[in-house]
Image 1 (spheres, rainbow, N blue to C red):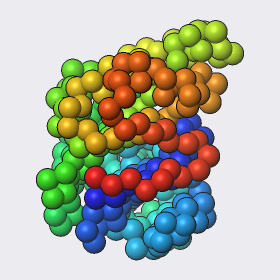
Image 2 (image 1 turned 180 degrees about the horizontal axis):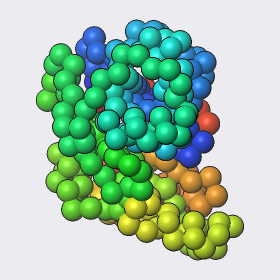
Image 3 (image 1 turned 90 degrees about the vertical axis):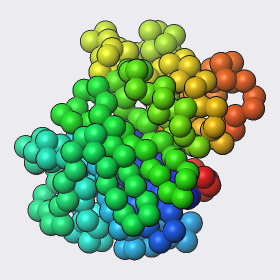
Image 4 (image 1 turned 45 degrees about the horizontal axis):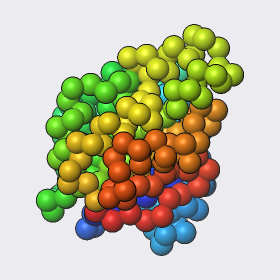
Length: 253
């Protein structure tokens, strides 16, 4: 299995996973032309993607889903509640090839499976994902709300993970956001801090690598997130950060 974050953050999220002949995109928060260009840079054609799977209805994850479908004919996988909320917001436009899944259910693509995990994030029907193929398990764990109890056994089962590490508590506290937004971010339906994400990674005894994702522009910095995780998990685990502006390197699981 291979994976690459095409972009990660509140300005747009999109992640590519490939196993054997199966090619998937998770979320569509960057424009189609940019996704096409970034996939081409690693030798992949966006028109050969088999499915676009949406985690939730926030614009930085779903904004361009309709474009991906109309321009590249990629089948859409989404929960009914997420689609309903997105259509009420009128951000998708005309759709075809819509496939539904239920939060907590599994989506099968040949020998690859995608387990969906309901999360307490402040979206209509938010999910995270575990992708499994040939005995390997990759977590896509962002927009989690808080560190709910099911996450520890999930992380302990993974070989690799993209994990939300949204904010540094001191930077958020001292930062420019209004108090209401600060409370939302660190509340039970918001995002995980560097410290919370690092504590979760301590359960990942099988992990080959972890990529810190969805870093805040104002309330975090890659060096701050990296240092916070090293202080908690030590030096043995390979750590990376997903950029808000460009693709990561190609990761192997």
